Length: 276
Picture 1 (tube, rainbow, N blue to C red):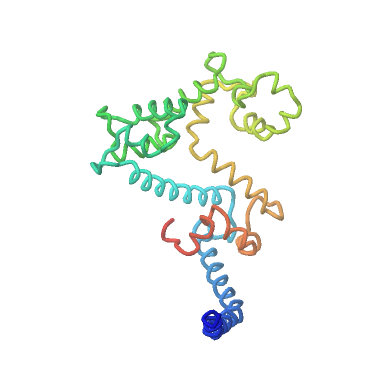
Picture 2: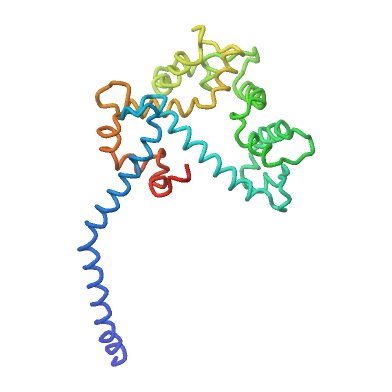
């Protein structure tokens, strides 16, 4: 009993000192937070203005898209580096299909994934040595960026979606729904944005069917997902509905939103802008 009491007496000064340190930290924290926020807001301003190509203090849709694209390219470069390091098991600067499948783990057990992966691997293997160099591996991972891989993407889309095998994609095939499901009003409401996109962007002759040329144009637009994100963000933050984001009032005033957004890699780019 004496021993336990002794330990408690010994710990009391220590606990008191730790509480004192915590109190001092809490007293100084607001100033520290203010300094950090000021620094990060300055970095956000530098980042945004790098994409204000005409220097008018605003971001138009294309400038916002350029920002998305720059971040996306950086993300792809990081993914390529990490996937390459994880897949090149024997360190010979080439990757076999077996090495890649070992790296992706349980995904290799999915028959659909396996089929698509094998098809892409063969298409990316330009010298047909059953190994991918770093350049070949890049177009294997990101086939949408390579003109020579677009036919492969076209074949994948048609295999997955062209249910009746007529070489075109109807609206219900594009959505992955049966005609009965498409006639269901509840389902229509849930997929309405995709229907609108199909009709406004992809179906250029307005017949509710995508021809091979329209499908290839869709596949060849490697920025289409970024464009959708850009338009959605512009619509969300453009308070005066002028089709542009004012850097001061609509970006920097929404600092917290952008510091947690993918456009700043959730804040990372505000600390390490040289990564972009």
